[in-house]
Length: 308
Image 1 (spheres, rainbow, N blue to C red):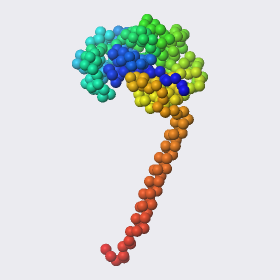
Image 2: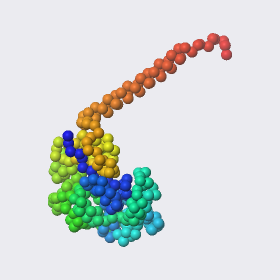
Image 3: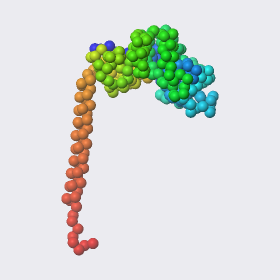
Image 4: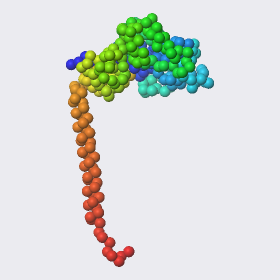
C-alpha cells in the first residue's frame, strides 16, 4: 500500500480558526499538517502579506476602520494600514463552517486578537516547524509601485526566512529565470501540460483539482486540492497522490488506512456503470409512461356521432 498523502493545510485550519491567520496555521500544525498553504499579496509599500481575496471586506473589519476604501484592491493599502485591521472577528460572526460554537473560551479570545500576517511571519513559522510551504502569489494591479518587481520582493523575503527547499513555487511568471536564481525551490505548476513540457521547465510537482489525477509514473509528484472529506482523501490515497490540500487536517490526520481500496481504473469503471444503469432506468421510466399513455388512449370510448 502506498504511503498516506501528506496533508497541506489550506489557509491553515479554517474550521478551527480564521483562515490565513497565525492562529489558523498553528492549529493546522498542531493537528498534524506537514505543509501549509496560503495566498500572498504585496502591500502598497512593498510588504508581502497573506490575503486570498482581491479586497479586504470578507475577512477583516476594513468597513469599520476605512469605510471609504472598502472597494480598493488589498494591495493598495500600506502595511501600517493593514496592521490596523482585525482579521478574526468575522470568523465568529459568520461561522463559515458551523464550527465556531466548538471553540473554547480561550480560543475565542485568541480569535478576537488576530491580525493580517506578513509573509515573513508565515515563513518563520514554517521554518521553525520544518513544514512545506505552498502559496499563490497575486500580481498587484496596474499602477501599483511593485507591479513589476513583486516577484523579486517575494523571493527576497523567502531567502531571508526559510530554506528554499521547503517552498513549492507555484508562480509561472519568469519560471526559468527564477529556477536559475534559486534551483532549490520546488517548481510546481497548476497547469495540465505534457510531461515533456513539465520536465523541460524543471517542474517536479503538480497542483491540481482533485478530479484530475495524472502523471503517476513520470516522477512528477501530485498535490490535489481541496480535499476535506475522508472518502475523498481515501480516493486520493489509492490513486497515488503524494499530498493533498485540505481544510480539515484535524480530521484527515486521524485516518491511518484507506476507508476502501480502489484503483483509478476501478473508480472510472464504477462511474461508467453508474451512468449506464442511470440511463437504463431513465429509459425504462420513459417507456413505461409511453406505454401507460398509449393504453389509456386505446381504452377511451369513442363518442357516438350526433351526440354533443
